[in-house]
Figure 1 (cartoon, rainbow, N blue to C red):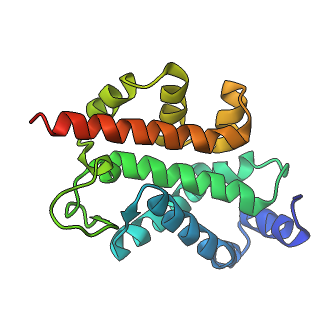
Figure 2 (figure 1 turned 30 degrees about the horizontal axis):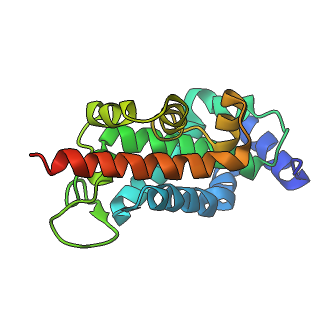
Length: 195
C-alpha cells in the first residue's frame, strides 16, 4: 500500500516542525504502537503489566523523535507509513525486551507473568535466564533453524526480512520457528529435569 496523502502531509508537518504536528502524529499512531507492543508481548507468551506497555509505547515514540526525526527522514514511501512504523515499533519493543531481559526472566519479575498462570513453575521459555542459555539451546538446533531463531528473537527481524536474508519462502518462516521452539522447549525440559 502506498503512502496516503494524509500521512504524507502529516510527515511533512512533523519534519517541518509545524505547531501541533507531533501531537497529531502521536494521536494518529498511538493505537498502532500499543497494538504492536501487545502483539509482540503475546507472540512471546508474555502478559505485559500496564506500566511496561506504557514504557514500551513511550520508547517507540522516543525512537521516532531521536536524532531530529531520523527514523521519519529515512522513510522512503515504499509502503504505507503505518507499515513502516509497525516494523520500527516492533524492533524497539524487541530491543527493550532483550535489554530488560523480560522475555528471559521467570514470571513474577519485572511485572511480567506467564499467560498460563500455572503458579511458580515457569514454562521452558521463561527459564531462559540469560542469552547464554538461549544460545546453548540454539546450539542443539539444525543450523538453518538456529539462524531463523536468532534473526527473529535476538535481532527482531520480520518474517519478510528473514525470508530475504536466508533466501527461503516467507511462509516457511513461521513453521520453522514453531519447530525450533518445540525442540528448544524439549531440550530445556531435559536439562531442567537433570538439576
